[in-house]
Length: 281
Image (tube, rainbow, N blue to C red; front, side, top):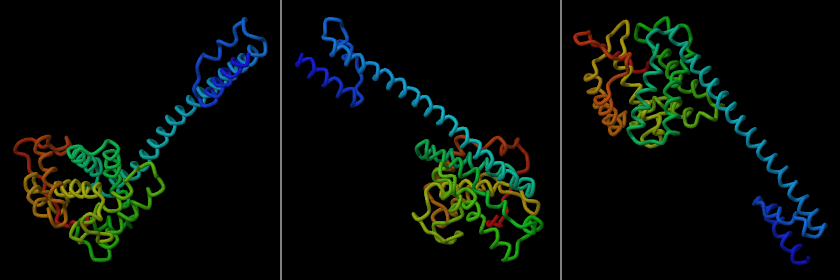
C-alpha cells in the first residue's frame, strides 16, 4: 500500500502541474484498498472539474477575442468615416485615402513586409489625412487658390492633429507614427518636425511615395494632374532627396506590372489627369 501511495502522490503532483492523464483512474478499481480508491476518485473528479473550467475559460477568451476584433473594426470604421467626411468639405480628397492605402499596401507587400506591418500601413494610408478634419473653414474656402503662409502653416499641422486623434488606439500598431511622419522627407525639408533619413519610420516613407503619386495624378480645379509617366519622372526627381530612391523604383515597378487602382484607370485617348504643384496639400 505504501508503494501505491507513493505512486498516487506522483500522479497527483503531475496533475497539479497541469499534466492531465487517465493514470489516476487505475487506482479507482475495486481491488485497491478503499482509502486509495477514495483518494483517486476525489482526485479524478477534481481533475474533471478543472478541465471543464479551463474549457469554459478558453471559450470565454475566444469569445472575447472575437468581440475585441469586432470592436476594433468598428472603431477603425468610425475613424475612417470621419476621414471620409473630408470629401464633403473638399471634393478633391474624396477617395484619396483609399487609393493611398492601396498603393502603400501593394508596395509594402512587394517589399516582403510581414502581414502585421502591411495591416499597419493599410490603416495608416486610410487615416493619413484624418487630421485635415481639424482645418478651419477658410482653408476649404481657399482650396482653389495658392494659400498664404499662415494657411500653409495650418495645413502643415494636420499630421500632428491626425496622430492626436488616433493616439489612444494602441491596436493600430505603427499607424500613428505613419500618420504623424508621412510628410517628413529624407533631406529634412518635410514637416512637421524636419526629420531626416532613417529617423523617419519605414511605413511613413512608404506612405510618402504613395501619397505623392496619388496627389500627382489628381485633378484640381485650378490645374490638371500629371499622367502616370510624368508622375513617375517627378518621383524619380524627388528620389534621393525627399523620397526614398529604393521605394520609388519599387513603386514604379509595382504600378507598371499591376496597374493603377480601378478609379484611376482611363480609356485610351482620354485626357490625362495632372498634378497640382502645391505640395503642401
